Image (tube, rainbow, N blue to C red; front, side, top):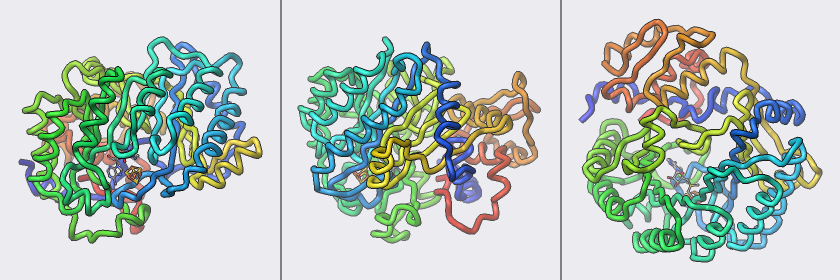
Length: 447
Ligand SMILES: C[S@@+](CC[C@H](N)C(=O)[O-])C[C@H]1O[C@@H](n2cnc3c(N)ncnc32)[C@H](O)[C@@H]1O
Ligand code: SF4
């Protein structure tokens, strides 16, 4: 059990560092398409290939807890025009490459990718693969909502090379699922898992969350026990992010319904103990793996990475995000697409990339980007071979609390420090320290 004083002290609103700098600190609103695509082409290495993230935003029902960019609709006529727009966006990108681009990773995220008919998903992926080269060690994955996924989806995507699925479970108790308006049963989760294995998928990931409204220790116990029984290869055990200023659905329940601080942290501690007893290994900030999973192997070999899609064992410097709200990354620059589906489709129809925001990193930001990534992936950063320096002044309290050790050129996360990696990153981040007096909510709490 973690020291309650530590939890109280460090449970402040803080960036998640899915990018460095975090999106609220990006500086360019008026994005020049050519400036971005030049950076992308410069950063691209055909031996490494590209990662594609494809955002498929539609869902039939709103889960009130959800913090993702989604569009709720039951109108399936929206499928074909959206897929056409994503194909046209891909055409704009691929025309920039001298030779056919090499694709190493594809991830279909959402929203709910399986809102789309299997034939539409097949049409999209088939088109992308017929206009590119597939890397021999490619990894294609997609997010699966248990209530909208059928055998056709699993077979169609298997046929175009998908071998990994990620099933949204969140919690198994009907009590919690009802509050978050998520109509699903554990039997549906079980069925989709069995189908996926029968079809030939070699890796099943599941997402669960701690800190959901009215969630108790018993709910975590029941959820983790079911998960251990289903034996996914990999598990994301996310901290519920409460961002009601951004995700209005979260206003459907009261903040008093949310486990917070020590109570929330004890939900994580319980889940972690049960998962470790069940044979899972903790990896990074919020992942667990069976020991033979390639993410765990990458973690042990210091080869694990993290990008907008989460932790990954297959890393490429360049990631192209297709679809409304998607983020792309060339390592030296980030861009984000238009979030509105209509405006996204209109801009693509005019033959332009629908870019609304960008950030071009300077040398200092590239230095901090690497250090923060290392802390999150390796629990250690060493900048003795890098050009740049950081102010270690803010690290002393973290050392006193036995969360880190540090020298003038390295930081090691120790003991309970793994639960406070976001705080450790924030302590060295020169941009974050400029706005510790923020009065506008921007980030979710650390725990
Ligand atoms: C796009 S959703 C999953 C795909 C599919 N729509 C589903 O619901 O099964 C991606 C994941 O983000 C996580 N997520 C969404 N909102 C969250 C929040 N407020 N806090 C923490 N995790 C969240 C959930 O674990 C979810 O499975
Ligand atoms: S959790 Fe998944 S299904 Fe529910 S609203 Fe969010 S993206 Fe849609």
